[in-house]
Length: 145
Image (tube, rainbow, N blue to C red; front, side, top):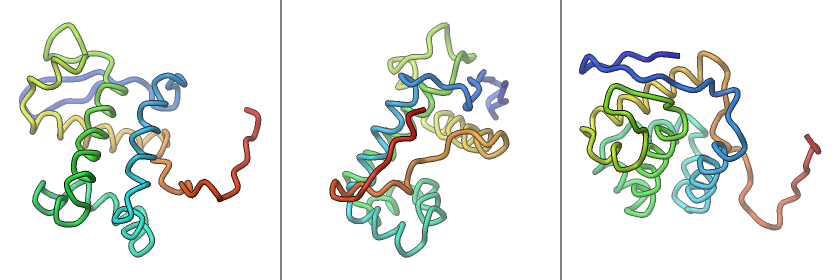
């Protein structure tokens, strides 16, 4: 899937429904880190996933005010991991890696992340695992798949 960016650049995304376990793992790890934050748990309890999406879209000052510096850093990490997981290639160079990503304009990274979210919604790809209860005492069940 090709996404067009506002700076006349493009990126090619992997099919989100066909991520490997290795690709999914990094995303899930960041999601679970976020879920351990009490402020994030409170947002999900009061506003649900919509509240979490609002925080992701907020500016840095609002994010820090709502979920603290640690939460802000984890949202930034989630954005970066998402981009590196879903982008197969892009017009920013031959490599899709952290070094290249860190040299991109911050607005381009945010735009790629936003476009990934739209693709995920359109194709019914994996969603954030925010419904998972991170409490180690909560029962979990493996389907064996």
